[in-house]
Image (cartoon, rainbow, N blue to C red):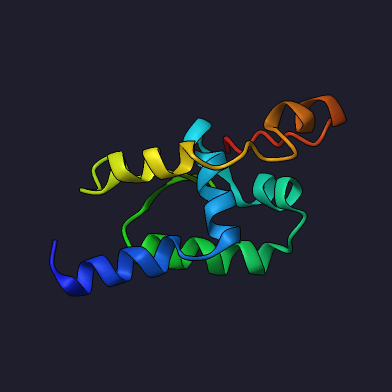
Length: 110
């Protein structure tokens, strides 16, 4: 990793909303619509954060029909560091289980 790559990585994770997104993705892959519910943010705002995380190589995307499922990029050289940093943060207020209970968990398979 060089200076430019490290700078891009640190900028990618250097936002509280992106850190919250990464905390959710540490547990499971999610689509933007699920993240909007969990974070109570708009779809365009979540998409902008996902673009920055993708540009830094921190997340991976998988297309499933019209849906994009996001996950942490386990091949990123700083993946172990990221997992450690995320483990230091408090658990998010809402969980995916809360979405299921509320009937808001989306099945973005096709």
